[in-house]
Image (tube, rainbow, N blue to C red; front, side, top):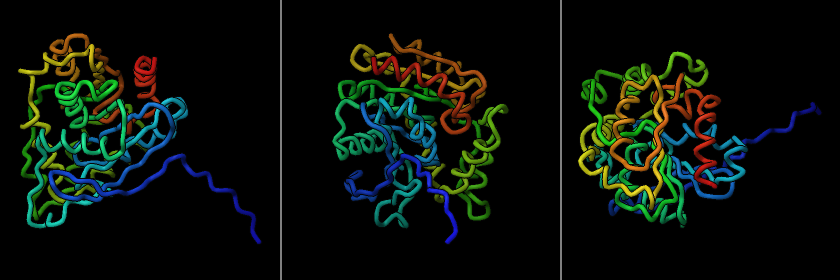
Length: 285
């Protein structure tokens, strides 16, 4: 018999369950690792929860936090609702907010921290405004209260264009040039696997429906602390837009991360941990 090296499993558990989203039962995929304060992680537009795998394998995080990442319905391993073939997917503020709240309820999470990136970073600010007492804190990665679109969304859902490849092409410029090629291409691979029209539907929330710079000043950071982190090379949610958002949200904390683009947790996990660990320690203490 040959000698085999023992398998070194990552400390991540993946499971499925069904929850109600906008009145429909949807089969949702969730991964988690660690123990302690729940840390719910929300992926970017057009991608899925795999973006947070590095946080889930970092003992500096998982020794203190129960890191939980789920694929939004229509994304990754989560299903769309039954009858999806007759629908056009379009994410709205209400649908996104209600989906995150339904997930936290289904998982019976008490006073979790919620951290999102890109569209996830934007919705956590809505959660801080509308439901401040439900969350211990929110962390907005590449999230702002107002953004502007800068390319034609019709390219993202056409029968003569590979949607996944064009989505990856659009976001490739959002990865910092210093980010390791291994993680750059892993980040883009997730985009190449997105469902038809999903990235386009997510950007409806991110660029159109999610604006609330006229109300973000009402966020009460004494009830729900707000942390904003923006990559230096992010040309979508730029550092300037993040800082403008922080200026409107009294008591919030804003950090610009040198050498990082739009996908800090997946494009350069070693550098990102230098910025996120002090934030998590502040929340924990």
